[in-house]
Image 1 (cartoon, rainbow, N blue to C red):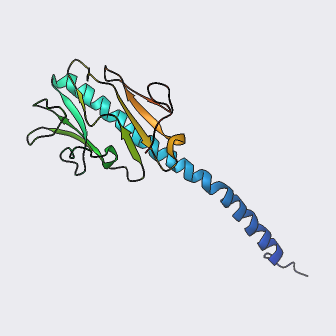
Image 2 (image 1 turned 45 degrees about the horizontal axis):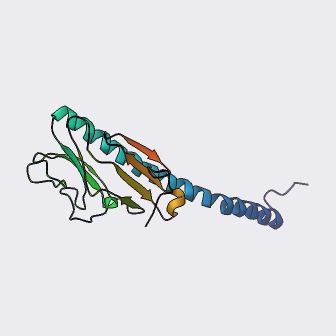
Image 3 (image 1 turned 120 degrees about the horizontal axis):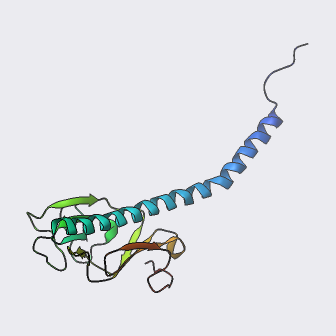
Length: 176
């Protein structure tokens, strides 16, 4: 007599239950992993923009600035959020706060971060040829998880960025 192939109803129900349990347990972890990767990507792009601006200012012996930008072409109006995207450009007229004028070379455009917020204490950043920008800056990258998962880019007076889970004073980050 031949043994029947296939699954019994009981075996199928047990298998589906095990798979459903594993998925229910694992999916939240994958969601957090995706959010961490997305936040890390944004933080790394911002740090890369700072290094680009610093090195270009030294190389060009001029001022290179970063500002938030909605259109990827010019700086947004005062109060434009950094999560709208930002640009790095050669600031020939050295204006402060930095505004990109026609004829000023656009070095790099960074896209918006639709799933997060950037809480910043600076409207623009400008780097000078001697490597100093003259002010400290803190940029907190926050997503829907709030302060618990926020990361900051803290910029020293010399223009060097570092990342941290706390602000420059060692206090928890503030997300709005």
